[in-house]
Image (tube, rainbow, N blue to C red):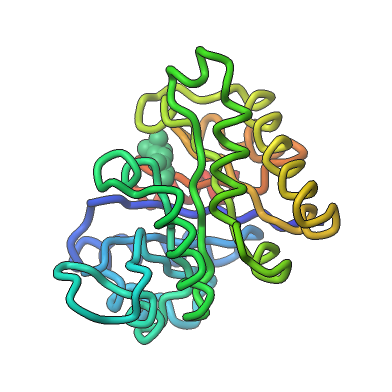
Length: 248
Ligand code: 13P
């Protein structure tokens, strides 16, 4: 059986001081949690968070990385740099990065490959816009994004990729996909992976749901057959709320 992984995406929130204050509350709350916990924080917080979560059950992730190891890319951070400070995960291709920072399926694919080269586990985001949903092309969009993201990876790498299905219209809007709808989309993503990499590989891939997950809806969503946890934005910013999601 696949495990459940609950990841918080703080987005552009929290100074190092605020990040440390959060952890002082959060670490004791979740110390006996059954599910895996990841916090994806701004770059500036990462070294502090790695330090304070050592010897805890909380893993630390970044929210983006460049696909080159080093060079003249002002303002960018590489996978090699993230690894060097003890970061273990990295979100790749979040819809906000695709939308505001011109990420494409091609750069997403390059970043995933670079993440694996640097021994980081990618959390790869896919999801349709409201317009795409209304046109009835959700399945095409999310399965295409998945196929392109995973292109050229080994079976072993695919098994170690976390996919986050995040319908864009559900992010930060308070609207969630129904649990059945989310489960159905995630099944379609898994079927696509099975078609390309085989059923055995597809069955091992962790596929999360993201988009307005809250303490009040986490249980309904996370207990669906194909949903292996979540990627949580706004509700991961308060330790008590995120604890209630982690321990749904
Ligand atoms: P919200 O939980 O705030 O809707 O954000 C979801 C998200 O984008 C997580 O990556």
